[in-house]
Length: 453
Image 1 (tube, rainbow, N blue to C red):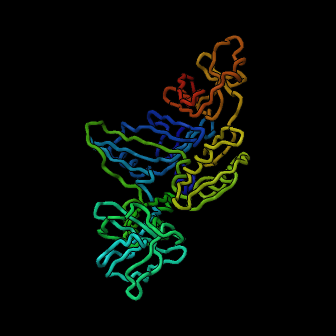
Image 2: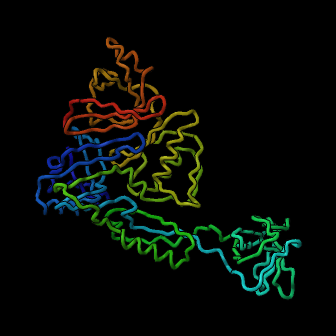
Image 3: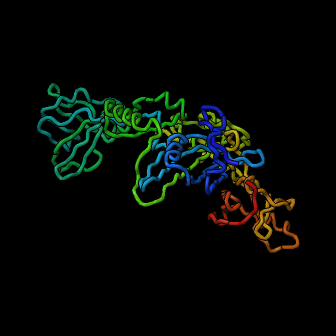
């Protein structure tokens, strides 16, 4: 049974004005070993244009739940809607690049503090540089050198050096140059300036080079109260604070709410295409901006705790030391979760990690023995009972060798294959298993199993 419910922050009440179980055509959904309830979709046809538009504008972000025999077997949110009417397609999406109500810009301000003024000359033999119109006093270096000079030559080459002490008092127009910031080795880096002519130069503050500066997080509290917080961090180089803040504010104004956008025009019949995503995807709505080292299980717990909608459930102990580095470049929490999971443990064991019923995230060692086998295209448990397709979760081993008909359990351990993804198609009762073979490739196993809605 399929039901439409309130958005996650607005409770769990069912929306009874919509009989989703009846109008959802072609319901299909997938569940992954890493991710849990992952993606789903269906179409809505055969209703009035007015009602279709109403669904298009009001369903975004609402919870869709599949229940079998009173048990939740898939749950997610309406993540994207595509409305095709009169040959024109509009979409509304909660993908982070199209919807974000908390925005920051990380920018690298120009580290150039001054440039050439007068006549320039390389004093190659003395490892010095002169600009007759310049006073180098503000940039004269001590260990470690605060500034370096970058000189563009007339032949399109570049010569650089760290700025040392003044050598031409009281004019102060000549400085000694060094190859290292500690100012212990005089000379040039880059192209040897012998025989070259300086065209221009820039004086660069070393500590300011490539330093990422935050413009500060700007948020839309009303949008967050309705949909939850969706962060989006933009990077911009060569900007100042004014430009970075303007970019941040433009992003927030345009993307703080899921908006309809026209994307295509054609001759397709009127339809509403609904794409759902499991709550796992909301872990990509927030960033980590710090680095942390700990055991894999500790980091899984910590990362989950920094999401808005997820809570940690069963977290198997994994003592593998892992570092999540997000200090210099902020990282989405979902990306960090996937990286931790992909490392397995010190013994080489695989781990499953996913979000399931009640928005609970489980992190568990993958099984090492088969739990199911195939019998003439029917998936059965080790007790010989056919499975209910809606109930199957991925991350298990299945015996795919049917050579022993009389004793089908004989090969369950030696011929087992890992199931990475399970897809269920309601209209046909079809179950599609994505398997990882010995080479690591993904293969699919399609089977017809009679299932109940």
